Image 1: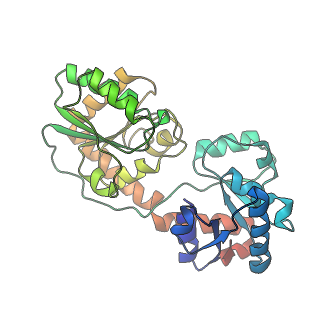
Image 2 (image 1 turned 180 degrees about the vertical axis):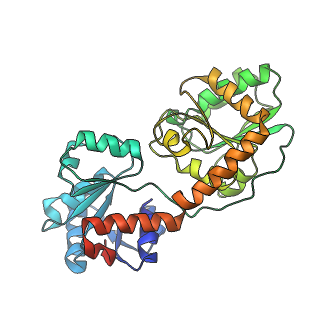
Length: 325
């Protein structure tokens, strides 16, 4: 989202100076000023201080706790207005000193307001350069079910595999493709083998074309245990793919119960029933997918996000319409 913030503010005519680690991923994505290597956070703060003195920004936007600490460090020079982007509700005590918190979802915003009642909190939902595809007119056989994300316990792919075993035992014909990589690959492979699911459940690895993957599915499933927002859910909405998701934090807020099928977390039996029901009721699934695609465009698309971000920044400082770092 730091990349999206940069692109959005530039698109609205702001003077943006993005800052990242010299060998970090972010520095390879945008025109970026880089921090000096060495001497840990003190060296980073000194390097940032030089950039701040040179550019004199109206506001500093910090993505992540470490970025916030560096921006707030006494080694970074005179105090600047610093906004912290809260991508989840795992707050550190020093967040109370932020000039404002930008929360990526309403649940995160609510948690921030409860934790820091004296700090101004604004909702800036995640957004992206979404690619839209027509809602599929008919399903294939076997059904093609997909999931996408880092192979991590928080994503609940083990629950999805358990649900797949139940569906297979009930005679549902499907192929489940889980796209992504991570430390849980070995455990998931063992689980798939244990249930005898190798013919129907595939770990396809990371994809550089998630939009094409999502658009080719009959159903997208998000089985996460933890998901403060869930940008992949928005990407599936844009792709015109019907959705089943666990009813948690961001996904519950995004789908609202009428844009996809919501099911309780940590419940593979309920998940199996939700998936089977969504596959069986194609008419209702298509209606939800069409409505979700419309919402994705006006609520989570790049232009909508850029307007939302610049509006919130101007509320903190009128001059932030023109300059931000």
